[in-house]
Structures are given as C-alpha cells and as structure tokens.
Amino acid sequence: MTFDSHLPLDERLLKIDHIQARRFSKLSGPALQIATEGIVRHLRACDRMDVNPDTSAVREIIDDALNGRRVFAETADDRRAA
Image (cartoon, rainbow, N blue to C red):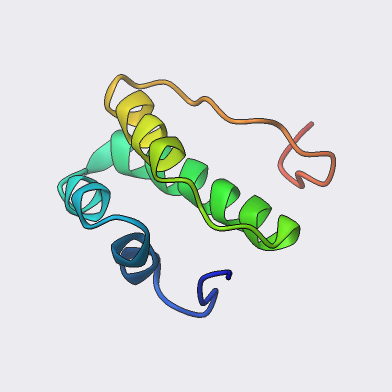
C-alpha cells in the first residue's frame, strides 16, 4: 500500500507517524529545507518502488536536518546536479 502522493507533505507525514509529523512541523529555516528535501526524496523513492515509507528513515532525515546535515542518495536524474 502506497500513500496518497497528492496529499500535502504534512498530511503524508501524519499518515506515516504522528510523532515525526509533529517534529517536522516544529522545524524552521535551513533545517526545514533540508528535512523537506530529504523526506520528499524518500517518499518519491518509496512511491517508485511501491513500498510504504519507513518511519525510522523519516526520523533519521529530521535528526540529520536538525544537525545541519544533508544525507541522502544522489539520483541520476537530479536536475540540479552540475
């Protein structure tokens, strides 16, 4: 079962885990940008593979964003890559 990709990010996070959704809602500034990018990449990968998003992966993305780290796999079709 995949989650509805047409829902806003906040609502998708609520369906994954309410604790991580609450942590995400408290982010601001660069941490919010880093977490948003990482979570969106994770959700896209899960949609492509037709698997459920992983709560622990979302938690790690938020933890890394709070520490100012961008940790995610690069994709071959990343249009922002040089």
